[in-house]
Image (tube, rainbow, N blue to C red; front, side):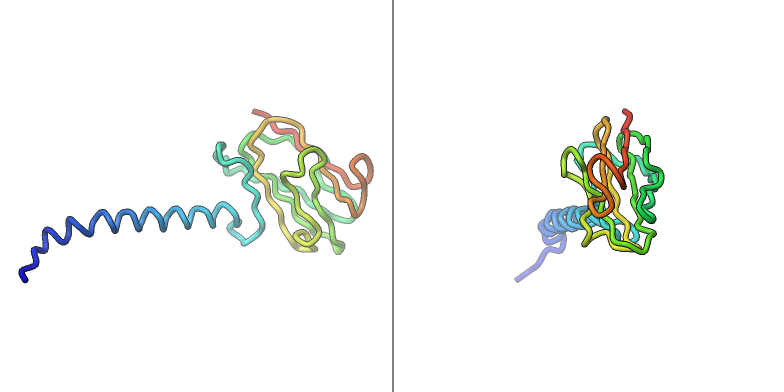
Length: 142
């Protein structure tokens, strides 16, 4: 049998391209769910591209610092538990974002990309309630 290298190359090329695209798509999914440091990431809706701006919030003692924060659509808020106690970050309105105690122990980091303008109130249920104690607010501007 006589094999024509040109015909083989034409037949295999589309298969290699499709395989590469599938591999890149799978890698992209992993990156959307893990931060560069391996921390938990909640990207929110995928219709807004992250801006690359990361705004820190520290959970320390029984407070979030700062307690009130203003960011832009697409910005990432990064909560870090720098205290000796367990904390959590619970959304008051939606429950679509936040970190439970099991995911926010001392030394842990939780991030969320805000994709819609609005005011987002949150709290730590261990050291407060929805209206008092360890609470915070993120104001997201367009």
